[in-house]
Length: 345
Ligand SMILES: C[S@@+](CC[C@H](N)C(=O)[O-])C[C@H]1O[C@@H](n2cnc3c(N)ncnc32)[C@H](O)[C@@H]1O
Image 1 (cartoon, rainbow, N blue to C red):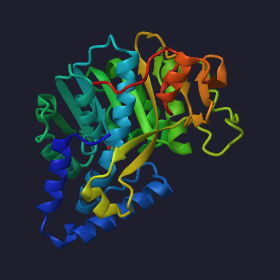
Image 2 (image 1 turned 180 degrees about the vertical axis):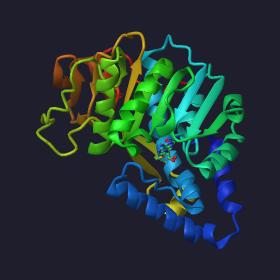
Image 3 (image 1 turned 90 degrees about the vertical axis):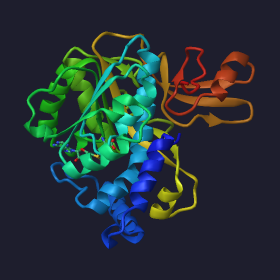
């Protein structure tokens, strides 16, 4: 997964054209390190942590590729499982520099209108500049609104509403109120995406429970509407560590990303949790792969979430069709419908 080329180019251009010392490459590297540190320490609700121009540009350079990859992966699943939905409008709440909107524009060809709500005017300014580089008219003509979600009592109706890495920055009681308004504003689907940490996953789980209670149907990732079997402290593969529902999206690191963040790997894996809830029930996935498949010479072992709870399935070479499918199946994919989980063109 790569950022769309025009976005990558626009970020490089923004970073290169800065000539103030406060936005030098050394300052951006420092800001990128501060962002990583704040993510590791976990974000305190109500305390904005992107607070300087260096943070904003560093966010676009090092975090936006990661949140784009997570949003893209979640939205591809929505597209796959709720394929009859026609998404023409998007509301992006806590939009930052617009990563989720860029992802939605890549996934939904039908997208015509985008509204982004963000509290930080300087992030909006940067996001708007980047969006002007897009080949998608919906991004170039998007409506960016500066507003504090805490102060909003309702939002205009849109086919798709996305909260990408934003709801976890808001105190839980206020988040409940914002999610209620977001659900009312979602004509077809509401998607919540959070970091794949225990805290991020519990924010997603709380949202899932709230939205099911409000009459919603989970389209992804869960193959059912039952209580989450991973939430009960269950063991998966004999391990309790990282035993919460999360997935990983791999993205290629640009030269700028490598310069600012160091390291030698050409890619990074962004761990994320998500839930997509629809207004009208869709056919759920038969099962979801919860961990990297364990691949051995003659068999592959899959850890699955199913309607009947957590299951381990062993696929042997003898079952040729299942074996072929298992070879193409990875962590986060659907299992059991005969599809090969190839990326959507
Ligand atoms: C981690 S960033 C995520 C940005 C973007 N959605 C993404 O996926 O890259 C969280 C964003 O939510 C915004 N945010 C947090 N609380 C907010 C609030 N109460 N009202 C509006 N925006 C808020 C922050 O300013 C920040 O831009």
